[in-house]
Image (cartoon, rainbow, N blue to C red; front, top):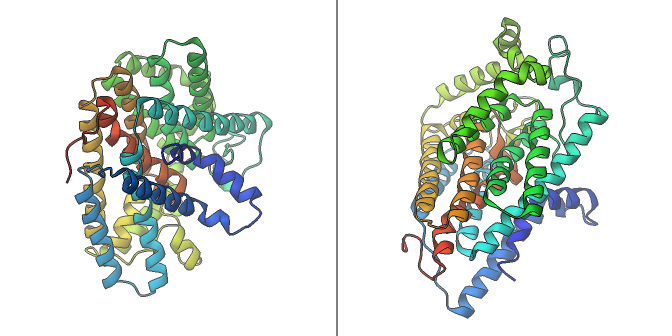
Length: 411
């Protein structure tokens, strides 16, 4: 039961939509994922105690503890409003612990494949609805495009997620997994499913018209090409050359970034202007920042609606709130996580698992790139997916060996 509960995690995007829209108790919308985490961890502890199983060690424990210690330290020394700081701390650290859930509970090759397939199924449902929105011309806020300059763009899709940029990030995570799954199977039915998933998610990503998501998926594609098959890079070049003919609205959306009008607009009320303001706040408190939850994100927007905004760069948001101490702790944690994932894949001698792992890792890197132009880690769904799938990668050496050995030994 404890292992099968993980399938609920990969269905997060669908469950969250259903709970928020159809739950009989409205309060569940904000806490259902916490209740899921507590339930899974409770079952895990019970199972571990009854079976006398050891907890798997990973080399991410120390970086997580360092990260947690830094954030708690900043909470204690710089919290003008403690309730705001605690909420800001929760956003920063809560979802990291999904890593340890996956790293310890993923137990077999079939489970890994099922987790990936169910995630792709959820992504397919979301993507198909996004494609439907595009062809039906779903209404969108006028601020999502520059209507004077981007005349060929009639709508930007958001599916059940609510945001084109967050939807794009979800597609970034799913596309590499769909591609490597398609390449890695010989079964016709599965090939058709993976092809459908990749095609729908690719179209949905295009229809988000999220330039940041396009940039991030480009980074993920380059990595996948270097790691798996360099023909991917050639295909990417051909697609780029054909884009002005096949998708003129996409070309216009990207080309607009090179114009003086875009720079002026962005500096006035867009990302460039918000980044400049964030840097000015950061310079005022370079070492410890302005305080957790006080700038550039969802917590600040809730508590200080007239003085805050989304900075649209998670790393800059963290830097402004927590200073050099906080951003260095976060970067250290993320680099250690990526190093652990890559080392885990080097330990896997099962070709199918290794290929699937490369797809997951490419998607995770894409999400990290996207965080450079969006606050993706402030979205519980995306933060949960990131840390959970990083934990899946950490478990792969143990899964591939099929023994009780720990991937790297206990910390």
